[in-house]
Amino acid sequence: MAKYGYSKRSRSKRNTSFLVVIVLIIVISVLFVRTINLQNEVDRNQDELAEIRSDREEIREDYEELDREYHGTLDDLDHMRTREEELEEKLENSSTFYTPEPDSLVSMAEDIGIHENDWTDNYDCIQFSFDLLDELRERGVFSCPVLLYFEERDIGHMLLKVETTEGGTMIEPQDNTLLEDISVGDDYCELLNWECQWIVEEIHTCSV
Image (tube, rainbow, N blue to C red; front, side, top):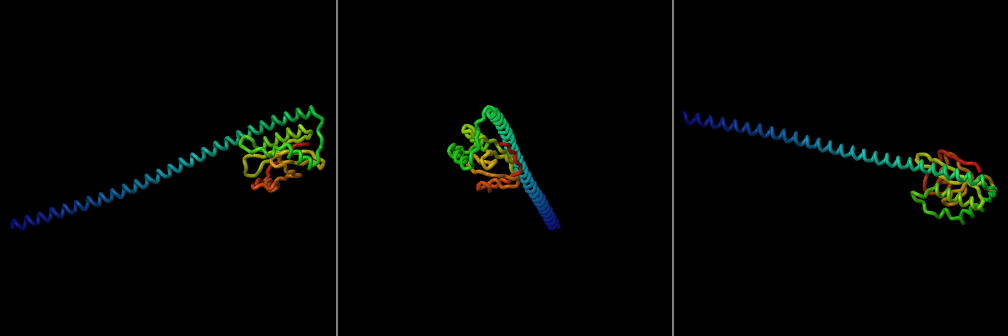
C-alpha cells in the first residue's frame, strides 16, 4: 500500500510542476509580447518626434529665407529711392535730353553693353536698370524705372521707361527688348520670349 501511495504523490508533484511551468511560459510570453508592443510604440514615437523636429527645422529655414528676402527687398527699395533722388537732382541740373527713335535706342543700349553683364545675387534687375539709366543719361537720353510685381512671387522686377519718337517705350536692360505696353495679367516672360512664367500683378510706372 505504501508503494502505491508514494507513486500517486509523485505524479501529483509532477503535475503541479508542469502546471507551474505552463503558467510561467504563459506569463513570460505575455510579458514578451507586451515588451515588443512597447518597443514598437517607442519606435513609432521616436519616428514621429524625428519627423516633427525635421518639420520644425524646415519651417525655421523657410522663415529665415523669407526674412532674408524681405530685408533684401527693403534694401533694394532703399537703393532705388536713393538712385531716384540722385536722378531727380541730375535732371534738375540738365536740359540737354533728347528723344531718340526706338531703333536708335536699341542700338545705343547694345553699344553700352549692360545686357552683357552677368546676373548674380548682388547684381540683379535693379543694378541692370540703374546702370543702363546712368549710361543713357550720359548720352542725353532720359529714362526712369518701372517696377513690376508678379503673382505668387515675393520679389519684383525693374526695367526702364524711355520717351522715344513713338511715345513712352519700355526697355528690358537684360536683353534690350522694347515693350510698348505692359498690362496686369500679362505673362512678362512670354512678352520677352523668356523660359519662365511671371504673371504681372502690379505695375508702378513713372513719367517721362
